[in-house]
Amino acid sequence: MWGDSMANQAKLEIVGGRPLQGTITVSAAKNAALPLLAAALLTEEEVVFDNLPRIKDVEAMLEVIQQVGGTIRELEDGRWAISGRNLDASREVPNELVRKIRASNLLLGPLLARCGMAHLSMPGGCSIGSRQMDQHIKGFRALGCQDIAISGGYIKAHGPLPLQGTVIHLDVASVGATENIMMAATLAAGTTVIRNAAKEPEIVDLQNLLNKMGARIRGAGTDVIKIEGVKKLKGTSHSIIPDRIEAGTHLVAGVITNGQLTVKNIIPEHVEAVTAKLMEMGVKLEIGDDYITVFPHDWQLKAVDIRTQPYPGFPTDMQAQFMALLTLVPGISLITENIFEARFNQVPELNRLGANIKTENGTAFIKGVAKLTGAEVSATDLRAAAALALAGLAAEGKTIVENIQHLERGYEAFVEKYCQVGAQMRRITGS
Image: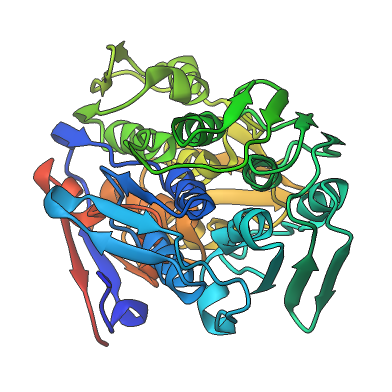
């Protein structure tokens, strides 16, 4: 759709050592856009998105939506219209398409709510550890969908129309399960209460869209969400919230290059865990209503300890980028990963650049070094790719990051944005 046939062979070439200077603008949030696109299928009318990010995960989600009978139209000014008028849950989505993107599982809620059935391949995405479907299935069963089976890599579900409102207590505050149950419950008979719900800003954005479509939901952003089911939803238009992980990545990029970088189109409250940790390190920040500026430092930054936690704690999606930064901070920093057990894939690649990192039992021990040196490294997932790109910006000499299709899953116009603020970076294809 907006990708290229050479994506899997693409590399990122970076010549480091240049402080970033200027202003960089954050795109709409990937982790908000994907559930919002799924939610558009809950109505026969068109839902228009004003600022859909042009990233590979969104492209894959649009392809999956088309496979189940949804229609998409690109309007003027980059807006996109999604319609679920011809939604058909009996259409089988090719396995290779669904496995491109973890968020394809978010179609289960809308399909069950609208059609009473769903048949999808188990989703793919980044290889960062276990992300089970048990909380999703628990929620669907509580809503009356007892016929659910996982076999041969597929999940098949059948339920009543309408689904039945109920009280659901999640065993863990799963973001995807919270979103899926919210969407399914919008058209259920009666009231649904989700307890121990995830609190992420992306869930608040989903509530906002669904309520504009005619749903009756309150409580998003807290651990209790109440959904009063309605018989029908309508079309609307929506502007997606800024991407807090992209914003955090840019802030770290400014610090790791010792530049003066302003990050625009940002909701500062959404990145408080990130800015608090930067200030703990000794970084000088200016925080405005919709921007944050990082300033150069001529003093030593401080080693810090980080523990990833569900929102509003420190985000797992930012630990790889902070690890890249901490490789250059004197002393020993610790990062403990509490969300995904396989999210230190960037460690051996950062060590190839000259970092000194060891891992043990879910904790990374980072001993700061005086400098990083360019080398050829390989990305294994989205945030690892971002971390390697940031390390390359700070390293002496040339760094080549292979497999940047991972980076392009979640960052819109990454190369263009960084070149505009002084990075020497280019995307290359072929051998």
